[in-house]
Structures are given as C-alpha cells and as structure tokens.
Length: 160
Image (cartoon, rainbow, N blue to C red; front, side, top):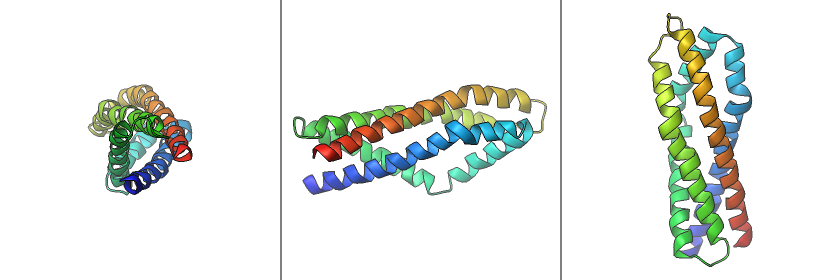
C-alpha cells in the first residue's frame, strides 16, 4: 500500500506540474497572443485548439492526474497523522476543486459556446469579448490551483 501511494504521489506531482505549466502558458501569453491577432483569427485559432486538445495526450493526462489526486485524498485521509498525509489531502483536494471542477463548471461551457459561433459571423466579435472576459479568469484559478497543489504534493514527498 505504501509503495502504491508513493508511486501515485510522484505521478500526481509530475502530472500536476505539467498541467500547471499548460494553464500558465494560456494565462500569461497564449490567450494574449490570440487576442492580439485580432478577433476572427484569435477566435478561430482557439476553436481549433479546443478541438485538437481533446484528441491529444492532454485529455488522458487531465483525467489520470485527477484520479491520482482523488486517490491521494483518500490515501491521505486513511493515513491521517502520518508524515505528508495532510499535504496529500490538501494538494489533491485543491487540484480536484480548483482544476477539475473549475474546468467542468467554468471553462468547458465557455469552450462549447465559443465553438457554436462562427468566428467570421456577426456574433463573432461579441462572443470573443465575452469568452476572453470569462474564460481567462477561470484559467487563472486553474493555474493558481495547480501551482498550489504542486507545492503541497512536493511537500508531501519531502515529508515522507
């Protein structure tokens, strides 16, 4: 059990770190670059990114990292009081709420709404402004949550 938990902890830390990097890139330069390119170009590019990303290694990593964090929450609760347990629970829970739930509740519905509008059509400009105003703050939450979760998971590794 301990070995499996250790492997899960290491996998979670690495995968959460990768996810933090992906979200960081979108928060701090990808979205600004798309917006700077101009509405129809930026919007069409984001629509393409949203279609491609679900067919890439991102999606399996998204779900595997979420599962690993769920297992760490359960394992940490079961071993409460042992070194690193509270950090596993905290890091796993922060990731599940701040990344997984935010994605499901915030970002995915906005991605779906964006996909339903023609970037070159009359509603394109308004949709792009709405998307940028709402999607980016949610992505900042994911970036910060992943980074915080990573810090806690590294602390759990150090404690163990």
